[in-house]
Image (cartoon, rainbow, N blue to C red; front, side):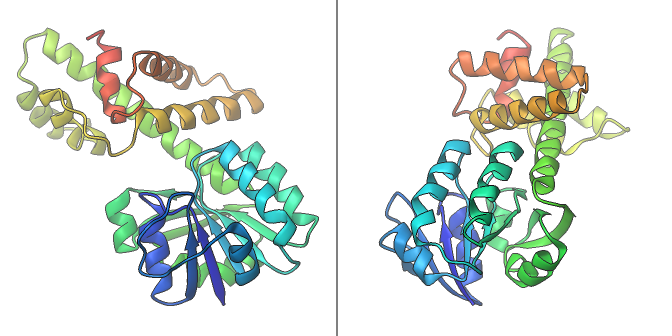
Length: 277
């Protein structure tokens, strides 16, 4: 089985590298990269080479444009696994375009960060036919250890959006409580330690507290990306006629963070917005 992996960014490159250890793979990115596998010359080469196309691109427009560029060269029977985090509505619209030329598509966004991508230990949420899931599972297993089929097309993306929305809400809570502790003149290191003694212990308290304490926000996941995903979550809530008040509050926080020029900083930098610093 031949695979073309398109989108060799922070996550895509290690994901493609792990697949290339077991499969014949070529990769492509709009920026030339040094890769341990063959780097394709064009989208056309990718389409003509591959039995399976895997994409990992930043946003809705990138994915729609990629499908448009690839469509003239695709053939019936190919498989397309999109691992980007995009709107479920955009994903479904492009699935319809691929259906017309006989290409089977699934959405399979990932969770966890670059170290997990390097180790092949990502979480993967699959949306698509069960038969297709079983067919591509060995490929997905090169990239992840926690792989779950969430249902039909777009359900993987819906789950990823729900995941990131909860992360955003948890971080917002961490921001508020550490901000209150600071105003109360409670030492923040002591505060984090004390919170860990009870039910308030949380991953995003443990891993982001130092950012806040040191007022330094090295980017693991950017405000820009979280803002995108929070807005997708609000779009989903609107579609489901759900109130989701905490989600909508977090959405306002990220809009303010974008306006404040924090787009490239880690999403924990929203501490500065929540606490008006």
